[in-house]
Image 1 (cartoon, rainbow, N blue to C red):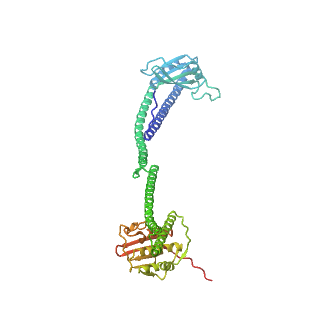
Image 2 (image 1 turned 120 degrees about the vertical axis):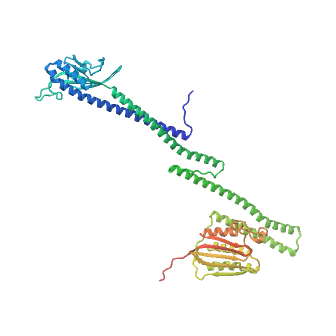
Image 3 (image 1 turned 30 degrees about the vertical axis):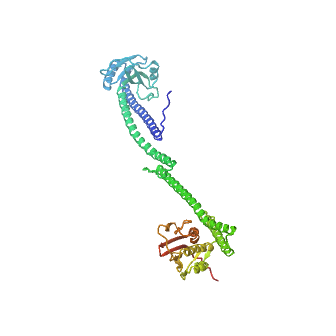
Length: 498
C-alpha cells in the first residue's frame, strides 16, 4: 500500500508549505494573466473587425441599393485584398451572392452563419463569433447593410431604415494564437524562475526558523542529561531571538537553582556533621563525669567541681541550641523585629558593660571611642545589641590576655558605623571569606568550648541584613582583626515646639 509522504521535521514542513503556496500562487497568476491577455487580444481583434465591417457595409450600401451587383462583387474583392479579410455578401433572401477572398487565401470550406443567425442580422443586429475547426481558427463579424445609413436604424424622417443585405468579414486568429502562446511560454518560464527564487528564499527562511528550534531541542536534551552549560546563539531578530534569550535565561535560572540546591545540600550535610561534632564534646564530658559520680570514683571534694562542669556543659549545649534556632529563624525570615529609634552611643555602652567582667578576667583592656554628633539608628534595639555582643565576644575569644579591644562609632555618608578592633592573632586571608559561615572556625586545632560555637558571626550578619545594613571584616595575621557594622542613619522629623 502507498502511504502519503509527510515531512517529519519542522524544516521540511515549513519548506513544503512555502513551496506549495508559491507553486499554487504562480499557477493562479499564470492562468489569470493568460486569460486576461487572451481576452484583451480577442477583444481588440473583434473591435478592429467590427470597425472594418461597418466601413465595408457603408461602401457597399449604395451599389447594393442600386442593384449593381457586379460593382458590389468588384468592390468587395478590392476591399478583401486591401483589408486582407474574407468578405461574403448575402441578399435579403439569405442567398450568398459574393465571396471575396484576400490574395493567396484558398477558398476552404468553413463554418459560416446559420440561417437563424442570418435572420438576426437581417433584423438589424451585429454579430461576432469565433470559428474553430480542423485547421481553422477565425473570427467572423456579420453586419447588416442598410438602405440609408449604416449607423442609423431610424431615418431622419422617422421611418425605420430597411436592411437590404448582409455582409460578413472574417480574419484568421493564427497570429493572435501564436502571440498568446508566446506570452504563455514567457509567463511559464518567468513563473519557473520566480518559483526557483522564491524556493531559495523559502529554504533560507525555513532554515532560519528551524535552526534555533533545533538548537533549543539539543539544549533541552542536554538539560535532561544534567548539562546546564549549553546556551543558544541566534543571529536573527524578533520573536526567535526573544525565545532564545528567554530559554537561555531559564537555563541560567535552572543552573542557579541546581547550584543553590547543591549548596544547601552541602550546608545541610555540613550542619549535621558540625552539630554532631559540637554536641559530642559536651555530651561526652557530661556522660563521663556523671558515670564517674555514679560509680563512686569521685570524692566529696571533687563532686562539686564535677557538678559545675556538668552544669557548664549543659549551659553550653543550651546556648548552642538557642543559637541554632535563632539562626534558623533569621535565615527563614520568620523573625519579628520591634522597630524604633536607637541611640548608637547608649547601645554601644550597654554592650561594653555586658562584657566588662569577662574582659577583666582575661586582663583585656576595653576602649570606647565615638563622635560627638551622631544620628540615630532605626531598628530593633535588642537585636542590634546582640550583634555588638557577638562581635565583642568573638574579639574576647581570640584576644590574648593583656591585649586590647576597641569599639568605635562614627557617622559617614548617612551611615552609622560600629567598628570592633582587637590585637589578637588575626585571620589568614584564605579563611577571611568564610568567617561568616556557620560553625566555621579559623583555629580548628583549639578546644571548641574555649573558642566559641562558630555561630556568632553568622547570626550577626543575618541580623544586620534584616536592618538593611552590611558587615565587613579585615585582618592582618599576627596584628589583629577589625569588624565593621554599617547601618542607615535615621533622622526623625523635627517636632514643632509650641
